[in-house]
Image (cartoon, helix red, strand yellow):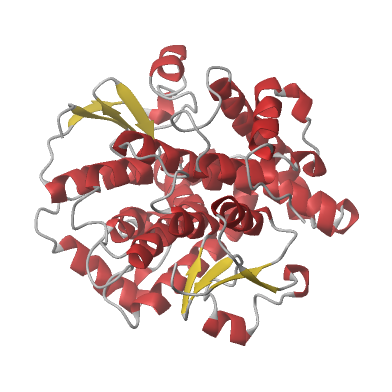
Amino acid sequence: MADALTLHEDPRSGNCYKIRLTAALLGLPLERVQYDILKGETRTPAFLENVNGNGRIPVLQVGDRFLPESNAACWFLAEGSALIPADRFARADMLRWMFFEQYNHEPNIATLRFWFYYVGEANLSAQQREQILPKRMAGEDALGVMDRHLAEREWFARDALSLADIALYAYTHVAEAGGFTLRDYDHVCAWIDRVASAPGYVPMD
Amino acid sequence: MADALTLHEDPRSGNCYKIRLTAALLGLPLERVQYDILKGETRTPAFLENVNGNGRIPVLQVGDRFLPESNAACWFLAEGSALIPADRFARADMLRWMFFEQYNHEPNIATLRFWFYYVGEANLSAQQREQILPKRMAGEDALGVMDRHLAEREWFARDALSLADIALYAYTHVAEAGGFTLRDYDHVCAWIDRVASAPGYVPMD
């Protein structure tokens, strides 16, 4: 990796943690620039102009180029490593779980953690309160899909740790902060322990 | 591609169309098996057991293996072709736009199309009605991000059509069925014409 790698992040974000964990497992050094999303620091004109026009973190800076979207950044770091399956179908299957994570998992499980743990229930808008129950149900559906998959397998794609596990681990292992009960999902709990035992693993801040 | 390719789809779905369009641009033959999502045909025990435990289409069947998630299926079909950039950063940047599509674009633009065009406004639940305005605003934000990106470029990743364009095209070009006004986004309109001019292009059913 010839270019310097800089992670533009809020350390409370599981999406940012995915990139830190991927870099740690690969032994890649990563500079960190921190923003407070609760103070709107990723919506300033300078951030929108220079880092990400979508106003979101994480963004992986590679030399002077900027790469938003956590799972795309993990892909960039891991290409050519054992974190991406060598088999064509398994590689696409890994991406399948990473898209599942962004569509079915993160908008429910990460959002409820953000609302309950950082914003605070008392500060939620009426519209957010109405979303709690549907997000709870959709999040439980996602955890159920994961648990059934892991009933027969140790990892999400092929037979080893991949980016699919890293992407799903980030918000799953802290899901109780959003009111989910992980002990309802035995296979997910065993998998969480497996991910945390990977050589080079670093915890979330 | 040694294995037979079968698309499990609802032809009204833009997510399914992405896979059809990718296969067409690559000249790959694709069998089609159709389901009616409005009749719950992807939630039957047989579908959940044999095709996708997440109860969703599209699913690309490759021989006897099943690959859910539209963007992962497009990736599988296109690996090694000109629809995926050869450059490492550009390849990750293509995935960046495909994750953006599933997170910021589809849940807003595709969902409003589904509600207005297929379910019908009169049949929406109270909870769905309360989501119309936030989804309208988030969808307009996504179209705005796309329009600003395309102000300086012809395509989403590097300088040629890629899977990022196919993923974003599917629901953008029919966004007016969900109440969006495409003529507000000049650069998006010009890009829609470019995608539709690609050799091998097929329209949505």
